Image 1 (cartoon, protein in one colour):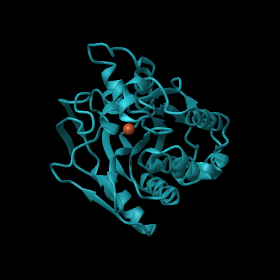
Image 2 (tube, helix red, strand yellow):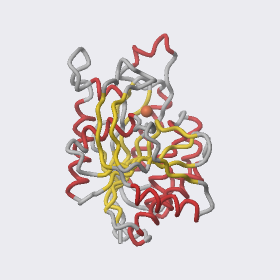
Image 3 (cartoon, protein in one colour):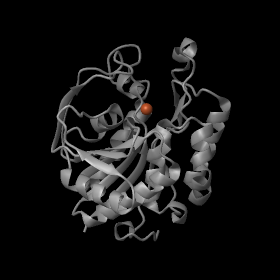
Image 4 (tube, protein in one colour):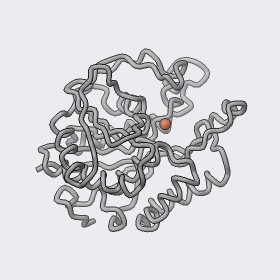
Length: 291
Ligand SMILES: [Fe+2]
């Protein structure tokens, strides 16, 4: 029987990539680099065999999609910010078996999902940036699930539940990563560069910090009750599908675990970023939510 061994909310912002390149941005995201590295260390320590990544940069418009290739091997340049991320060579094993189980469970739950193996379907940077820090030896499989930008929080809660059912059916130890922002309001282009290390608005900063308090104190029922509103009012990245999947996996409003924040909250070109590791319910792999 498979097991969920990790459930984490992670950042992937391109400024983390810039932070490890020579030049004027070198080192600016060191705490985030270290937090992502720590997530990778913990995943290994817990025996993770697959990183299942809800990637808010693989944006889908209809249905739910998995990249189930046997091997993810290519070179990447960001279309959004080609000067930030380019010539990123990657080579990771994939997880077609788990992808198929997830597809089956999503469909069994009454939703539509497909697994793809097209050679030109590459990884996006919400997977690639974290994997650079977490999976340097490519020893852990990588399985991205896209985020439907027109999906609802409720749909993604159900996707999270389907992910857990599939993990239980698999023989895998799985680390789930919700790779996306907190608030995600981009500033107008004219002032974007001036907000490299900042959040677009004080309201968004305040709400993000209140959310982090809820996570730290285990007030997850309160949080998921406002998640749909949070997504709308704070310009959620990828419809905050990654976050809804995360808590769907963990048991939604029945989950009482407390998130462990692994780096300080920070602004990045107007968006709110963080890395938080959530304890997996002891019996989560059996579909129960006992802390
Ligand atoms: Fe992003």
